[in-house]
Length: 112
Length: 114
Image (cartoon, rainbow over all chains, first blue to last red; front, side):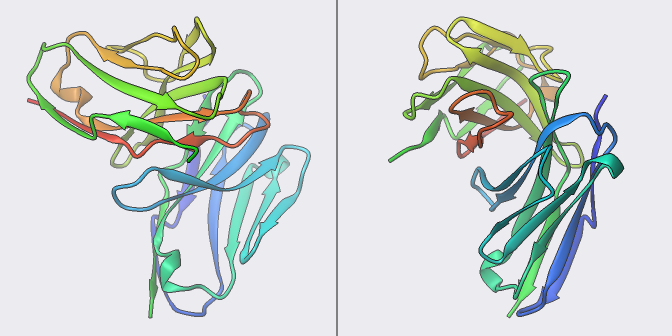
């Protein structure tokens, strides 16, 4: 069974700093990996989707990389802002089925 | 506005009293799914549906039922709720199979079973 782990569970950084969030998964047979953002009291918002054949995706200040063979993905946030404060979740869909597996998330606080 | 809506947003009920949480999307999406989110466990998939009248179990389907009679609606049914089903529930949809499409999430339903 696929297991997805995110480290650290919580992270606090000063505004303007660049940061990296980590996601690891145990089964490298995946269709894709997605990064989501979750704000308190709200649903999840998709940030980036990386297909299994891709190495990275970029959107604005966000860059996500995927190393399928080692079961790892990173989300890089450049020049962090207080508005980036949220919980970030990664999720994979295994190519053995139609199911999603989520990590437990990293709670990010950007201090002004 | 393209969105996934869930009702109710908050619900407190008692053990054994049947309840339904509705989910509706206005994007003509084929794929819909239900998740529950618990502290320390992350989001876990309950059921998903690839299209009308096509549903399948996710990771934690015990104690839940779903139906997909219309493309836009995917209700979650708890026939006899128990306290261990106290959780935050999310409905999600995507245009087609999520191997290639982003999932859009509803705002969540916080359920407490006493």
